[in-house]
Length: 305
Image (cartoon, rainbow, N blue to C red):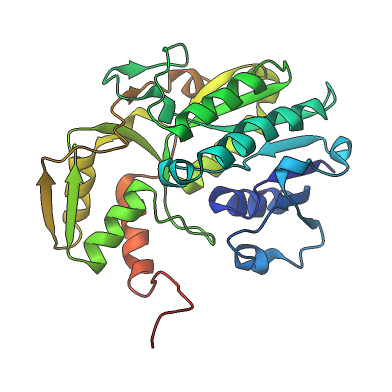
């Protein structure tokens, strides 16, 4: 039985990845600081093959040598969180990643959660060989972490498209998730730099990509892969219009500029040639969110009922 560690395993992608690894019969350890609470893992918390360790990735992972494979998802994710905590973003995304690698043996498998965000605002089609242009603390720290990881032969970095969809640990700052929520709850969506094109991937396909990478590790090790599909390249306005096809709301195309402008196309031919193609569409994700957002609200202890 494979023994697997998921750092950040209680997070948005980590929770769903952990579920799928357990379904495969693996022994799984989640390492997380649980800064957003414990609820995301309660539904699998009693699973016989699940071990949960509460800890800070900056202090290292206990007994790291006992794991056959490590999925490294721990980090401060996204433009707003990194912009608000730039020092912590560097300590966690970069320095802690370096410390993690120093504790691994040559034989241990490492699969890293990277991002397409550091392609910046080139406006052109980007392959894994394209010169990067990070426009945010998030992009810069993730690229620094990727460079550290790729110094190791037995490692893979997956540059994920912007993820969307429902998870036990929801992230509402992700573009599609945020757009649908605002359209439903506020009846209006303000777009900044609506021409900006990015690439997207449903959370279930992101998890499938992690599993695909584990299954094809011998073919992929030592390399970087864009993770997604060209059919999911959209402008902000196209995303808004796809939502408007489902529900009625007002789109305001603002002349104000986006502080986190990302504008690029992405080529996924490298991973597609190995057989990975995302199955779910933007419309699939919008339909799911419309159903869930019909009852889901941001939770706050201070909310008056």
